[in-house]
Length: 242
Ligand SMILES: [Zn+2]
Image (cartoon, rainbow, N blue to C red; front, side, top):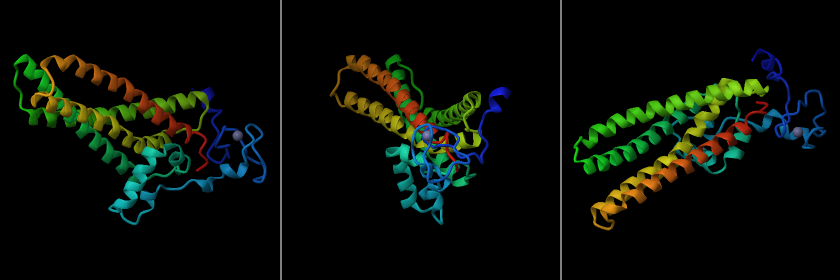
């Protein structure tokens, strides 16, 4: 750890944002000796606070939605232009909001799934109580997983000599939180949709195994999706100069 940490460029070093080559001292009109991209494309002024962080008030819904759409649909561009070293309460609030919304969606899926399973076994448990307990459980779980992933990322980056301190990784994870929304929505829609079809007589009682296979497939698919979006965030922040 100590040996690798000594190789991490300090915050004043100008890195090529595309390949990580140390450009410190090279003329701004020049090109990166490693990848050939213009040095000017790696200057710190390309990065800044996101649209919502620039709003006068956190209640600016338009900018909140614009930032949400940018992270969700153009993550490479979003993280490539985000100032990574800001200590931003609004960035943390963004992450908190989306982790909570995702927890509500996951808890809805889990509570109705549990209710379906308990009905099969002839057991009864109040749906509202299991839903509240699962919201708390999912929220705590997502906060814990995010914190663990951030620490592991910084540990791995330190080992590899990459400039990704915990504050930068956590800032990336604050915005990455919106990506939990996608599996949350799909899971809730699948569980509620299945039960609607089942209880309205559109599906037979033997459809349970297909339903379970679909849920298992979604878990594998969305694990890949969450890792891919996490990697896009880190890849576009690990050579950041601001
Ligand atoms: Zn380069």
